[in-house]
Length: 240
Image (tube, rainbow, N blue to C red):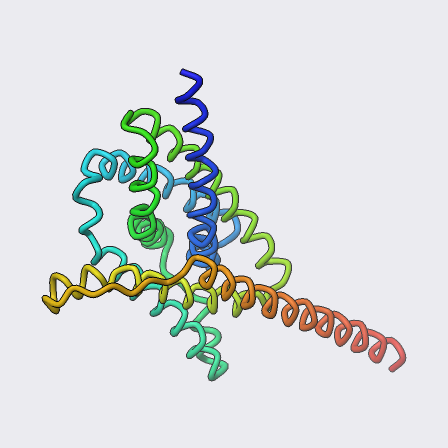
């Protein structure tokens, strides 16, 4: 029993590490919703994540072949980031960019994103233990922790609005990761010429860290400048 508890704890930690990028994506997906509905969307998304995790564990042997789930997820994330940056080209585009899909469509998007990201976690879990309840318990606790992380990301994005651009840049990089991970299956099943492309973990997180640090520095400076301009405007109105 103690051994099972240790494995569950390990799975929770691994789920958190593997899902750090997922939490950021979820925060971006629900950011356009009113504040009162953001946490609801994440909460409703949990139930779908629980269900898919259970089904995924039951057919873990076949899941490794579902490379197209990663490709679809990567394509959608690339679409989101491209749409965001293209919408900055005009004032009308920026206004349109703030208008996202409705509540239930957002929940569905969260569910589909969970599926694309869950493959690694499922395979790691099955590799650590053959007991379904142990792997599932660790995965469930990890999913709950991930939702709290997504909520924290939302608070940071609200405090520093300029970080929205950084978030979408990170989402674009995450889409590259998903495309690279899906390529071996694509080359085997579609091109009929098996080949492998590997994105080193250190390189992925180095780029993630670089984008985050540069983006955060820019967002903080932009927010300070915005506040300074607001104070200056008030002073001018008072003196006038």
